[in-house]
Image 1 (cartoon, rainbow, N blue to C red):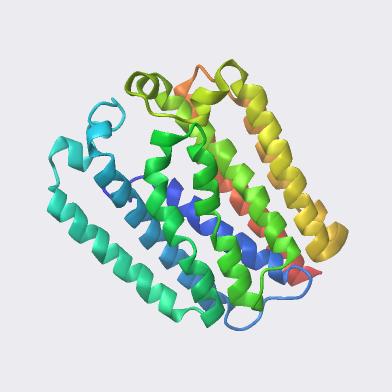
Image 2 (cartoon, helix red, strand yellow):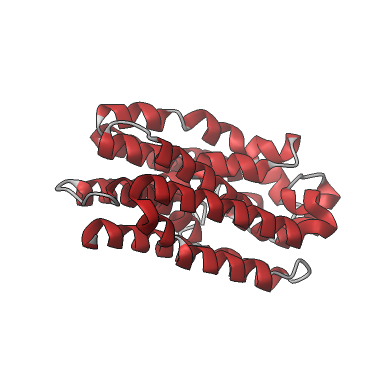
Length: 279
């Protein structure tokens, strides 16, 4: 529970940017021997580091979590796990992440290390800014840059555009997720974009997703021409239907839409991977 193994959506949303980044770098060419090994490393790393991030977040937020209905039964505030046990488990997961890091090409190691300050500071963002979801986007999608460094030894314009697109993607889906906690967050003074947007939340999500789609299409075009841009269409349609179906007053639907972003990310990965194989 500390690692959220019972809630796997986060593993997908951390691992998919790595795989999507790989697919984009291969879109105008082809997959090469070793890509399967890299993909496996990214998946293992995503599971380990998302679990570590959740554990670290719970350690820092244990007092806040005790005041929020949705999180009061988490292992630390409920007393099911001691603080010492949580720290030990955090170190175990970081050890797995370190093992994955050591298996990456040297330049990818350096790029991956750049995410550490962002991971460490993320749990503090909701205390100091209304935009913690932007910080999460910067952190969760760093794998795009790591994948680019691992597969081609550099970060290109297309990779940077994709990184920007997925930051907006995370800003959108995590704002939707935060709808569930708006009342509790307002009471205890925790900030989020779901609160910041207020009555304009639905149009804000629409604008955010449109920006995500535009940047993703541009990344695809830069990498693989019109084929790469057109391949974004299923992903775009998925985001558009999310924006249409969103009801800011319906927490259950917000959770459903948030979880559906696994399918959205898989669509983008599958379409670019198809170009890499078939075109």
